[in-house]
Amino acid sequence: MSYFLETKEAAQAFNVSTGALRLAVSRNSNKYEWLKVDNEKGGRGGKKLLFKISKDELLTAFNQELITKNTLILDEKMQKIKLTEIISENNANRIIKEKNLNLTEPKINNDLAVLNLKFENLSDELGYIEQCITTFCENNKHEFAEKRSKEFTFGKIGYRLSKSVSLPRVKEKLESLIKAFKSYGLNECITYKEELNKEAIVELEDSTLVKLGLKRVVKDNFRIEPKIESLEIQN
Image 1 (cartoon, rainbow, N blue to C red):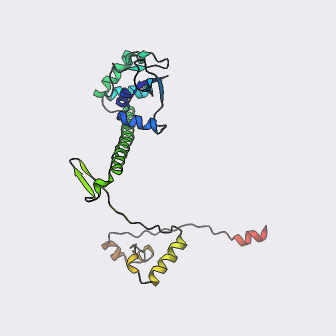
Image 2 (cartoon, rainbow, N blue to C red):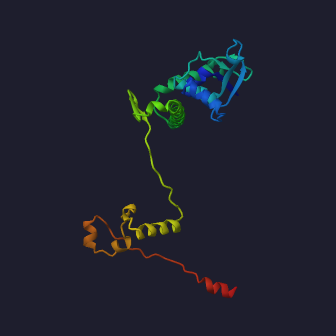
Image 3 (cartoon, rainbow, N blue to C red):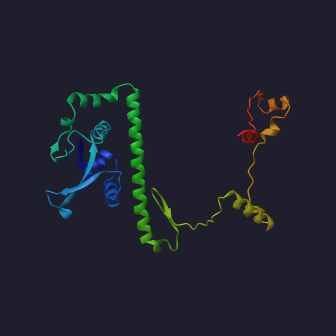
């Protein structure tokens, strides 16, 4: 069975801002399931948002002290229901007492799931805040005409010119381009990666390998080399 929370309570349960929830609705995101119902108290458009939440999500939110027993919860028939009516009193007490128990594998898994959910929610929150700041700055870009950045108590925002060149990813085209750079004497545009030559290292003397902290391992490897051409002739 599923349950529903109004925007404010859902934000508390999912540990995000109400703005992040409304943004998800405006984008028609599938991260949260929601619906609009008639608002008995009237209000904007005569509708209110409800967000779908599972029993497990409710228990997790309660266990993390994001919601209380008095949080307004609606069932599928849009009837008000108390958290204590959803689960037995013993179950509720077990969740409360779980904080004082030693770590067990189920609890660790539950905590990891909660942390992952919080990380996802924080990422959504960060994306929402960044979008709001970016939109505001784009609409007021003239404020950055003289000074390209502005510093505030909790950080700095601003514009910075950047340059980029798209390079080919196909190996043959990239090798051809490198040859072209060399032919024009543009060697400063080429970087070289240093790598160890394993074939040369394995032939070093034992004394040298010891100095380098290395050890030679000799194996008698078995191999099979089929003669494909002979098989083709017999067939």
